[in-house]
Image (cartoon, rainbow, N blue to C red; front, side, top):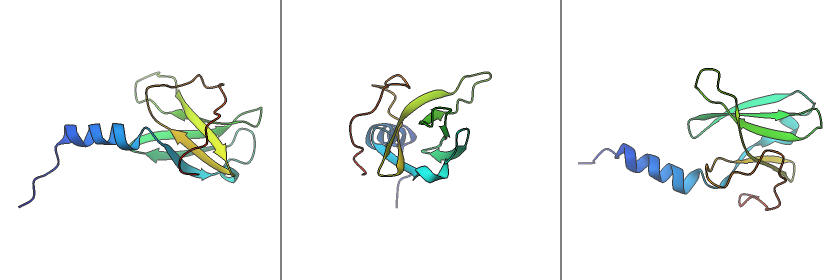
Length: 105
């Protein structure tokens, strides 16, 4: 007989093991022009990847609260691929460049 997973244990495992790393979203060609956006679901959260007026690629967490502003998440473009990091601790301001190479690359 198998025991169903404990919901608290599952959430803790997702938070520590999976969310803290860099995750591939799509190729940078998915948002080729200024103003283009891409919405993906990653670990149950909606992430919007946009290309802004300066041609930079940025990512935001969509909040479900009424009138909540999108929360920036760490985003990096390496080798023509877009990566995001959903770890809630150690978040840098949205305009701070990421110097580390994502582990997935």
